[in-house]
Amino acid sequence: MTLTREEHLFVMMLLINLAVAAAYLICGLFIAVPIRKKKNEEAEFLYDGRKTYIIRFFIMVLCPVVAPVFFFVTHLLYLTIFRFQVNLEDVIFDKSRVKTQVKANEERERNVIPVEDALAVSDEKNLRVAMMNIIKGDMQESLSSVALALNSEDSESAHYAASILSDRLNEFRMGVHKLYRQMKEEDQGSEQIEYEVALIAYMEDFLSQRVFMDLEQDRFVRMLEEAMELLYEKNASRITPEWYEGLCMRLLESRNFENVEKWCIRLEEQYPNELCAYTCRLKLYFTVKNRDAFFQTLNALKNSNIIIDSDTLEMIRIFS
Image 1 (cartoon, one colour):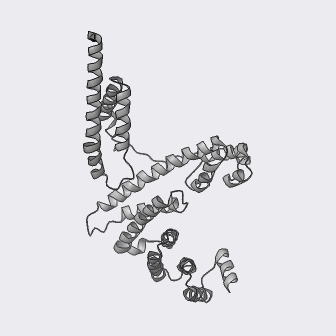
Image 2 (cartoon, rainbow, N blue to C red):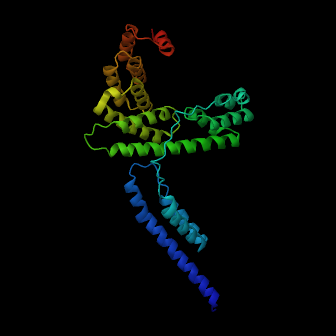
Image 3 (spheres, helix red, strand yellow):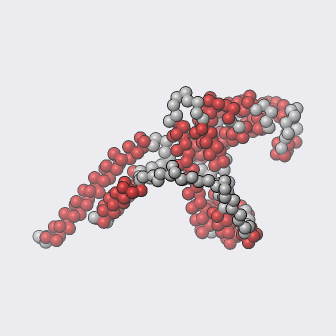
């Protein structure tokens, strides 16, 4: 059976397309990805990882000519147009002269309920309203509540929650790795602490909400502790009691008891008259079931002049 000229051309086109796709896959897996990983050693993920090249390979095979041309043109546009950052040196963003008066949205405020309450009563309407209000407002401190809606029976509410978390968590990952990389690139022995301070302040609120899986949460906690260690060595006075307490709680959640005790001791040495210097040790000793140390710290707190909050007072009443 002989093939016509058109059939020969078609077979040749398929073979050339397959060769181009295979070359693209090999170059991506063994050249491009290792280079990107070497440049971004601390990155959580790569936009063009191995999985991306494998998917593109199959697309090229299934859509000959069109797919390779599309990927080539889009990459060419990225290199020539979208890769360069806009120069904003001459642009000044100053909000000090602007005072915006926004009228209260009374209808929206009347319809606001906590996400936990909406989930408890399985009220789809109220849950969707709550999720939309979170999207419109400041979501930074509401991510733990949003995570609860992922298991909602209402698919639309679960979709809202997934979209919110995906965007915010990716933004957090990128921000953390950028600050962490800048911190690691500082000269050895440098007294600069701006990156350590920025990284600690940025990570604390996020990690306290525990919206990551345990493995990723623990890795971020290690990065936070590394930044705290560097800041402690350079200028311990910049570490606030809240930062000490936050790190101790994150390490305690990770069950890293040895490091919790180390930071509790540092907290006590630097801020002996702060309530958290006692509560952090109490929580540690209670978790590891160190009865003697627990009651010794509790008695020391009772005999001190520190103002005690309601939660600590309730704990004293229980164990007294």
